[in-house]
Amino acid sequence: MKARKIITVVSLLVILVFGIIGVTKMYNSPLAYDGSTTDAYALYTNPSVYDTSDADGVASIMVKEDLDKTRSQNAVTAIVFDYRGYDTMGESFILLTAISGSMAILRAAKRKGGNTDAASEEQSH
Image (tube, rainbow, N blue to C red; front, side, top):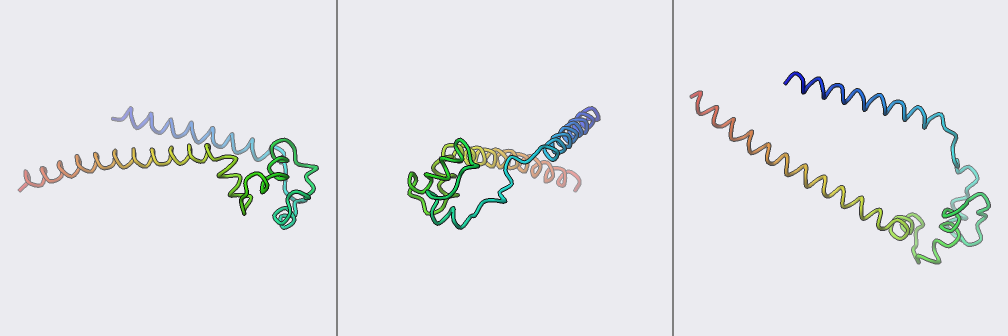
């Protein structure tokens, strides 16, 4: 039992150290785009004439043709459900699976724990 606790503590410390290293590297890396020149109202009202000279690749396509291709009323909804629909569906499936697995494990632990407590109380009386 003591070895198991040591392994748990060491594992958590390794995760913590790598997390700190990752956050430090991300904090010190330059920003890709800070959004300071974006006029959100102009982009929302008429995205086809909005100046996208600093957007590149897929971002340019999403900004220029978002509402025309998706027929959505909101740019965020169009990106999440049309451009990233399968990704969003996959994330939802993973979340549902994690919740179901957690409930199954906790329910089994509760049954085992409840039965042993009741049995130990009966033996003590």
